[in-house]
Length: 298
Length: 321
Image 1: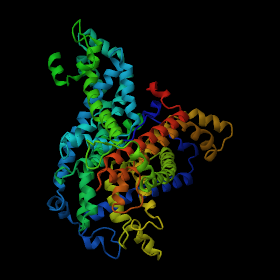
Image 2: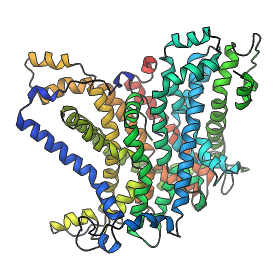
Image 3: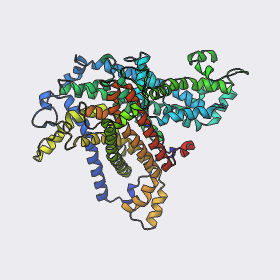
Image 4: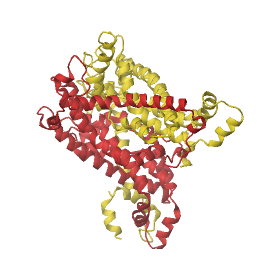
């Protein structure tokens, strides 16, 4: 995971803005503007176009001498082909990715939010020292520790298992840090009201703090899920046996296979993107807000 | 509210880590609650972050091939081996070239897109989504599209089709390091994947620049366009720019997915992580040398972060949220 923090004041993309383009709104200027944006947008969409085109074409159309703009007969039958392929168990890899992605997200949120709250709000003499212990781990990028991580997981016997894929990734110092920063800004009055009502820290956390922080949780959850779904190095290291491959490892194996079945691998790639495109369609608000607030990315 | 059941669900190690003495009932005690909330995370952090780091440092001083419980102490030999190893130093060189290209280009492209989108009055959300969409794509999926179709070395690759219209011969984009066309493939893939993300950061920052600054500049006779950009927009974006550059550097440093997939089975264009992967998990399974390489990389990235932090005053703004 790539991590750092941008200034919090850069946040709040959702608030109403005043368009500055209006200052010099000549017709010529705005035509040029839309032309530039349009060309850039088309270029950005080219890879998606190629992906869809190839996914629904036949191999002779893909490898033909002349570039066919779009397959004349859309091959709907291609959709099931990756699941019937005997060389790579694509269906299993999708299941693995879903299980890992969901559990990774739920676990990370649970563990890191609790710790973030404890560090932000609960008085304890040595809380500062503990916090520095967490901060230190931010300096060591997780990608660099994959060698010792692999060593540890293999000596636990967790190679090729969901445990090995999920558990080592749950304890993100950065996510914990984000939650701490968020809870520092959480209105104290709400918790105090809960305390007056006789709730302890634990009760106040679950009944008052969490229900009032769902936006933040949603933002972090979206980003965590995307990172989990797209991660490659760790699943590659842990998934030695094809039955434990995530979808990214399966896609990677298509590229080194002896026989290349173009329409099949492009269809598999398109299918692997579907869950995330759904996330994008329905959760983009939280995603954009979360990124603007935290500046994180995988 | 059953405090006891919740207690059971949390791993009980925190009690060991601190002598929590709940005198007036568990619920009110700060110490007890602190460990209740942070315990599970801290235990995990200890096992899955601190132990691997420690183990790695230990392994790096041993002759450790095919084993993770070695017995032959070799001092700094693994470090000497890695630093004198052309593959490893070459990987550091590859990273330097990569960072020198990808950091400025991504910075410029994402800032440019943000400036364009910010000026739109219609369909702003649509265009923002289009540029942001590649963020959903994994590096593996993008590598596959780039390698198998866009920059396929044969005639039916899109890039070769396009240059074919101008009568240019096919180019073997990835299969030939001379001339190093593979840089174009790798850089364009990463540009496509990450620019939209940084555009969002710049957009948020642009919207925080007060309008009064532009109005005041207009009164002072500043011409809209380059002058306002140079003397108002760019300075106002300074904090975001430096943060973006640091993020880009760290991301480039950890590049693995696209190099591994685009350049599999080649010996050129290996960044540090790919090199480590082959050292530690390749045919030799040399965990000692691999660990030494990981330690060297970690030290380097800490140095770079601290250096950059010095320049940016990083960490001081920590409490601002």
